[in-house]
Image 1 (tube, rainbow, N blue to C red):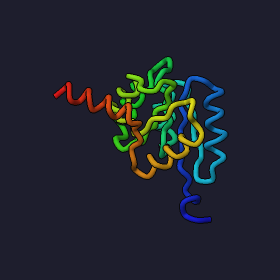
Image 2 (cartoon, rainbow, N blue to C red):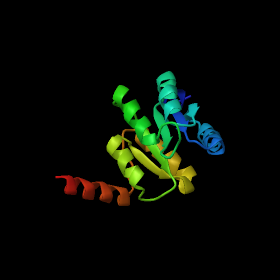
Image 3 (tube, helix red, strand yellow):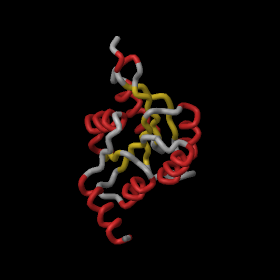
Length: 148
């Protein structure tokens, strides 16, 4: 077994829809270089599961009860500044996604485009890259320019 596959990318999946989490677990888990180590249904569970499993990558929905994805990102990054979180969202150009990047997210994937794009984004973020779609990057730049 080569070194890349001997240490699979450990993934935490957080989404309030059980069927969606199960789908992620199936297709991420079917990759030889990835392993789902935990799941959460809301932000509080995300923080608990992150502390328990210390995943390499966290896939985080933003719209959840009990604690939002943005609040969970902020809480996790407060304890683990080097965390790598990929936002999962339904809406392109979502203001919430912009806030998530400002809170420290490293990647962004639309739920409707999931499989191939998600797997590529997990690998890229794990390698230290940031994956920000152009429309989100433009909005963040506009917001930063207005704030200065």
